[in-house]
Length: 457
Image (cartoon, rainbow, N blue to C red; front, side, top):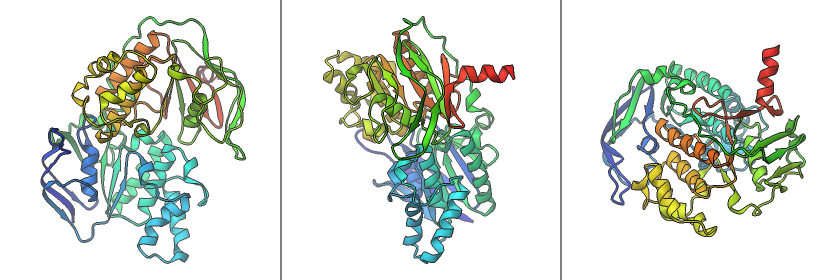
C-alpha cells in the first residue's frame, strides 16, 4: 500500500542559494526500507522533514499522504525533540495526545523502552542520558504510538555497536509488521540486510545508489590514512588523570580509572566506549565545565580544571555543535574567538579556503546541516591553535570528504604540538592515533595495555 509519494518537489532556503531539492520524486510503500545517502549538506535531513510534514518554508510540487499515514521521526540531534524531564514522561507524551487510558500507559512505555535496549527507570532524568541513549529514547518515543512510517536521521553515528545491532533487530521486526522506514545514513552498509531501495541525493534529485555502498563497511572504508608529519613531542604531559572513581555527586559511579593516564604534547588519543559510558562527561570535566561532580585528581595544562582559566590554550568541541554557534555568518563565527584572544583574523579566511568552504562564508551557520555545523565549530577552535583540543565525536554526521578534511586539520595541529583527545563509539582506522583509551565494563584504561594482555592470554 502506498503511504506517501513526492512528485516534482522543489525546495530551497533562499538567500541566493541554489535549491536543495530540485524536481525530486519518491514513493514509499508499506513494509519498504529506503536508505538515502549523499554528501554533507546536500539536503537529506530537509527531505526527512518534508516527509514528516514539518518543513517551515513553502515548497513546490505534490505530496500524497495516505489516510492511514502516521509518521515517527528521530532527528540527528535528539535533544531538539525532547519535551519532558523524565524518561517515562517523554515516551508517554504521544500516548497522552492520542488519548490512551492512563492505566495502559506504563506497560506500553516499558515495552517501548525494552524494545530499543534501554533498561532504565521511568523516572530517570533525561538530562543525565548520553546522546546515544537519548537517540534510543526518541526511538522509543516514536515506536510507542505505532507509526506506519518511521524516519531516522543518521542512526549509525549516534549509536554504539551494541545499539546498532539492537536497532537492526527492531527495524527488521517493524518491516515484518508492514511499517515503512526511510533512513538517512552515511554508512548504508550497517543496515544492508534491511534496505530495499538505496538512493543517492545529488543535485537535488534522488538517483539509484551504487550497490557498492551497501558492501563497503565504513570502519574499513578506502579512506587513505595520511601519514602524519613529524610532530613536536616534547615529552610534556599536558593532561594527567590519576586513579579515580568517576561519578556525579550522590549518584553511582560511571567508571573507575584504574591507572594514571597522560596525554602528551603532539599526541592524538582516541577515547572509545559505548553510549552512556561517560566519555562526554570526562571531556567536559577536563575542560572545567561539568557540573555536579566532586573534585577529581585531574590536571590540565598544570592546573586543576576550572571554567575560564585556559583562554585560547584549550578548545572543546561538544556533541551538539549548534550550542557553540551564535554569529550571523560562518566567517564571523570563525573570527569571533580570534578577535577575543587578539589573534590574526586572516586565519579565518585561510581556514575556509583549506576546508574548501569559502562559498559558505556569508551563510548563517544556523541554517547549515548538522555535519557542516560540526565542521565549522571545529574549525573555529582549530583557528586558535590551542595546546589542548578536546573533541566529542568529531566525525559524526560527516561524509567521506569532510572526514578527510577533519583528519588533515587534526594532523596539522598535532604537528604543531597540540595534544588532542577525541571520543568515538568505535576505533577509527582512517585516523592515525597514538593510543586508544578504553572505557569498558566500568573501567577506564590505556587500550594498548588491554591489547597486550589479550595477546598474552
